[in-house]
Length: 171
Image 1 (cartoon, rainbow, N blue to C red):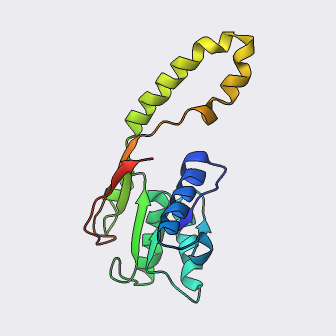
Image 2 (tube, rainbow, N blue to C red):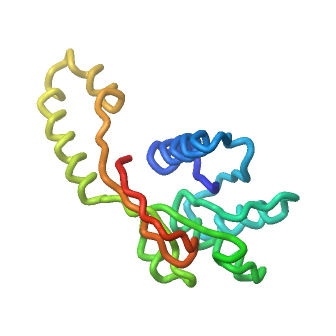
Image 3 (cartoon, one colour):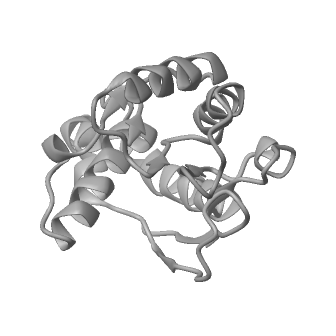
């Protein structure tokens, strides 16, 4: 797994926790897999993949916290003539425009950003009346701990993983 800084709640912390939960389902732990942290860039994905390839035990697949990181991974693998998906499977998250431009096309998780934007706006509208009540200030600061909004997602499976299944759910 190539993740991002866990101080970033959505792409860092939440996705890291999701990967940990998925590994636990199969009796594994994050310490048992190749894990690197990268910034949100193609170059960082490339460098993280170089580090993973330098390890004695290579994985047969890499999940990336973003599609941009996955683009760097694909570039690194291509330069080393490591066939995707035959020798290494690659998947990203976010379904950014780059996912459909890469070769091979990238398997990616599609999040419903419009839905989550609408939910965030509704949440903000709910909070606005509380902003003028001095006793509610502490409540507003802790509001992100009090309300979790689950929005749907789905996996767009294409050539980079050669997996024939679609996963849907809420995150």
